[in-house]
Image 1 (tube, one colour):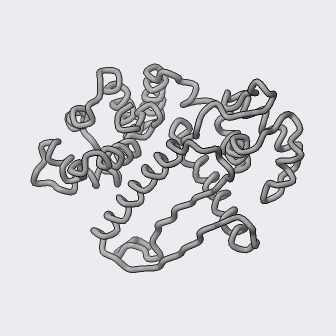
Image 2 (cartoon, rainbow, N blue to C red):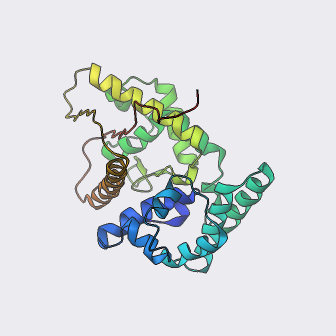
Length: 280
């Protein structure tokens, strides 16, 4: 793991590149997107890295140059190339072949392709319960959780959620008989199915809506901005948001005090205006 970013937590190379750059720049401020272009041997093409993040095709030669910049070892290079192949596959056969390569190279392949993962992200309360178990001492009786959980979830669904979390080895009972998480956090990286994550995000957005409409004693921060900016400024905002996510992960990971609350945080940045000249 380099700069707090584990390549094996990703199946989409563009997402990996984006998070790696943001994390490394926190330790090396000079490691900007423009500097990456320089290290790739493209000093006159300052936007190449940003273009790749937006979908530009990466050739095999450039993939190898990226591996040097990313300081990857031999196996990580193979995994990175498999991610590139998976993302840029033109046929289902090519995509299947690339996925098989990812599974073969991944140190824990069941994290990439596991049907239980779909069940995990299908319901918002699975991830919420995972976090709650770090805050509350809970045994097999989930009544106390159900009474406090907002919005309401049936006891039967919570019991099924515990069974799922245990099956995924995300929780286990401690010496006092309480269910506790086996890791500090979960990233969507290993289960990086776009449609599945999109559905999970929609559920999270609905929770935000309910939080706005329902008065609560819990602290919350709700902020909305509407603005007009250039493409350049937008890319800077996008980059800063990615940096903030990296900083947030570090704050959470370094929190040595006992957790007392469970929070949801959604970041939205989208346009209300279609690009000029868009086809009807």
